[in-house]
Image 1 (cartoon, rainbow, N blue to C red):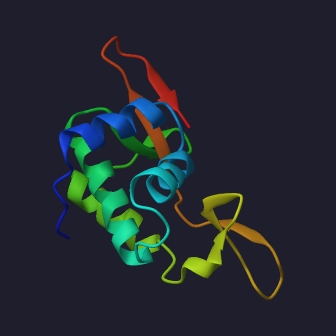
Image 2: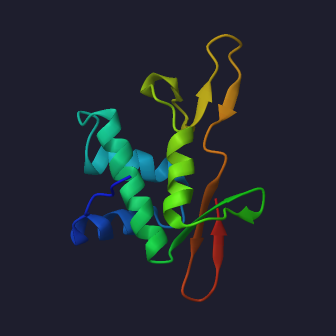
Length: 128
């Protein structure tokens, strides 16, 4: 997977807006404030993953599930996250993009299977 270069002023705006928040907040901010919904779904997804990559490379963000950090390289973790991502945007649950609704039984499922953990310079970890 190739990650996009993100301009410093945009990257800083994203951090200021969503640091400490969930993946849903990052997705919403990217879709509404940075790229807009007119940008195709796949490009918004790639931009989102690129932001995650930068945050993880800087040591600001980790992925975790059930109290345990994901293992593997950043690239491997993002590949896992990306591979779980629904192919069809219409499947994303409106209340939280990390959820999908089964069209047959109406049940809601957590497709991401991992959340954000923000890491701060003082050692504090903020689990979302």
